[in-house]
Length: 140
Length: 497
Image 1 (cartoon, each protein chain N blue to C red):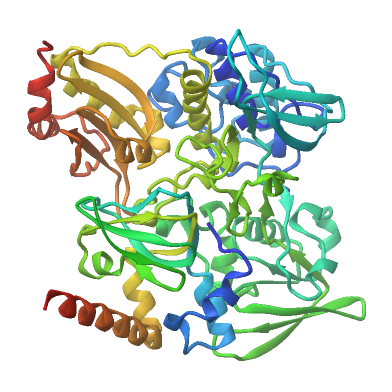
Image 2: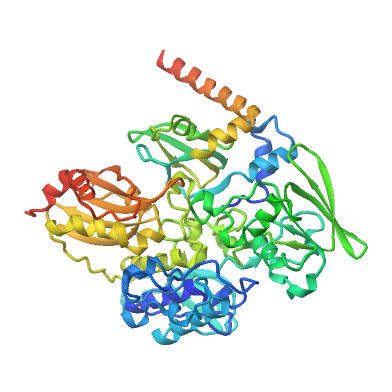
């Protein structure tokens, strides 16, 4: 579903796109589709193939592993990148805790998207580093 | 609400289930948007006349994207009999005639010329000695008020839309396209690079002096995506013209402004590198799509999303934010389903949403009107051939891949029963007993392949089978693999206690 006009302004405030100019934001926004999920709806399903890379525009989502809630995601956060990058099924469910509006890119397009936009790739790597740091802290 | 293919299909399916309903429409006759569009008067969806399958058989629906569905053989495959044989894409008048013929033959009753004006929700009265406590919808129309516990909007995605680009509101929209000869020897700038933009460009190739098409993102082609996403092959001639530097220009740019310039226009564009380019044109056409005409429904609480302002929906096409309010027809693309591998459903097109309407009718019958569906019993020995036949020739699965599924219950107490066609998302996200859901899927890279989702003790496992070069999944290899996949649940269901 093509994105609504307000998406460019919304994503301009997200850290993932902090380095982009206006025309670049416009181009990037139109590469994504827009999706909406009702409260309680699953977006990613643990163990089911064919997922994508999602960026939250509005609302919150829960990360659920083996039916146990683990963490909450909010506007500007993204999910699904691990299964896209590794070509594997998601290791958790992502469930809409409120009505949830997202941008989505199919897994098959993520590599081309990131290599074409190295600044977004760098910002995504920073995000992954933060996740790794938090996980390490939690484990220790 | 609505008398396009979505409204007609739903009315037919509700009638077959014995559900009393009214259909109202602002139009004077059946057909919906096909009474006007496409502007060049030919459909994008095909109906193949020769397929090796009898036209009254269910399997023929896979090759006929335009006829509505009927249970009785005499009302099936209306379209091929009406087409003149010059193309396997029906003309717009042939499509309109097909819809009118279906409505007439099946006795669908519509109150035409009845304009829906506003909507409200009120507490429902007690019915049949009950306490009430639910809600009713009241639609105010040009012919008075209609009141019902369930309303279904099949209103199309038919309201012309222009993005907020300075000056774009001053130019004609796709829907305002003039007679083609008035564009003779002119420089035409088309804003938008989807099917409507390329349809106009294709029609103008023999007329226009220059054609420029522009939008921010590169064009996708359906032959590359292996889906209906992207510009269809019928309309790629301007793309080839541009690729061979024949005079058509295709730009990946934002449109910053459209300014009047003498008798024509000056269109200011900017690409992702920030470079500006101003393009003079005699005519500018906004091929920028359509939105859903929902009137006051958003104020009532119906949430919308995306450029087309589609209502957000549950897997059974109920508003995600307003209970009792459903959708049919092309609006049902707002229930996206799993979109596996990024591939959407075909709910935007007749060949997809005609099945949604049939599933919705049954869902309404069971959940709102207490009319249970018949679930036929299946013999264990017949199950494997039946499932493989469905993934090889079942039209619902071919047209709605990874979206609709054939579900078989494998119950330890009651044995094997056919649940029918169900939204795949609903099967995956609902609790239930042992069962299997059969569907077809694509990953955008090759032929479709069958996938079986097996639910055992509350957990679902996904089992994709290999694609087949001739798209026939009934052979021994498929039987052996499916038997192995189903064995854990089938052995327990085959001998009910």
